[in-house]
Length: 533
Image 1 (tube, rainbow, N blue to C red):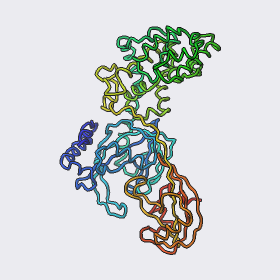
Image 2: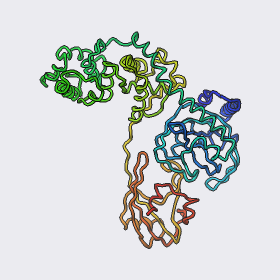
Image 3: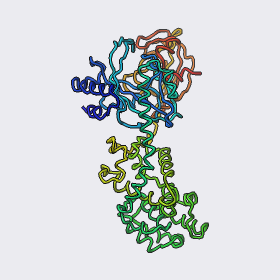
Image 4: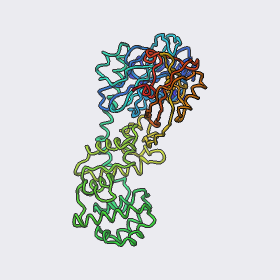
């Protein structure tokens, strides 16, 4: 089983954890995949996630109905060997947070936890043991959170020093404190990496960099031309174009004055012709506003046509040693692996964060060399396609992803999925003082939660009556209709609410009074919004 290697890689830090690890390994060898099932007689594996805020001062917890205490988030493995994936999924499902990131994909703790006998979904569950593995996550506070009504209440951020006051399970408090301390230590080590990588990169670059034509001097015009050409184009393809371009247009004035036909001919084969058109517009601005001299100022260069953050950062740092990092996909990949950062590098906030980290270590003597060293490392060692060449990497000793063997799954690159829209007609069927609800399927969106009866599409009043008649509830009065919208991560529900009084109950539905809707058959927000005024 794959989980054997995951458990074996956990390094116990306490005697109790060492014993728990050995017992769990024995159970895995004895029961194989059965240990992932709730039916295993010896107990079963559960996966928890302890979520901290970015400043590491708060944790996201919920009041759990089974334990009657505030606690972490998690759930049963239920046959899945990807334990970290289970923990991640449970954190999202129990809180509705969407932006949540692994601090590390290593197991942070293994604990054997007793579970008292309890009732769940109307069934008695005898006391048993959870062999619990825990992972650490970071999540921004400024996002919507919600309860998972059939399991927890009052999901919220709490200060970590408040855990002893709010947690009634006394045996869990030292476990939470232990894991939080480990997470804080990991975070501290990550913050040290940019400063620790600086000198090794500065020592490595002079001897190991490629001898490229645009690295022969620090003339801003030369650096700028090369950076624009290298966008979307391989280095080997650019070399000859670069040489020919400078022979024909040796300076800003020559580029500004060049006839368009001649300019496009020089560029022929490089593609993305707007690049060279913007270059000419920028050169004309430099001639008109700066007397043909590139301004040694990031904002002024950034304002020129066709120049973005990366190019402006490269020109300013390489040519004048200004503290302006040039952060592109190569650099993001290097930093994500060095810090074992599981955030999405396509997220602008992540890019800003890495840029800010680099700005703190840039100085007026080495800024340009550091920019080029990071570029070179990403292009030749910590490569985008294929396995990184860790054996020759100058910063391999401080690379957290190498230490934890996660370099092959980093960086995380998740393009935003376009949210699709689904239209539904949702029925509020009223019989005396009761409303019809039913349980959703065990799989998929809002799995196993309660819902109001609904169908796909927007029905006319006549179609609504026919649908309810087919359900056997004998609709007798259409009270009102309303419109509501609920937004999930990848889906938006546009809902038409239809309120109908009925003359008969249908056994396919559960008919709940208002009190039961609050306590027993609690509806998720997606359906509760239909009932709101």
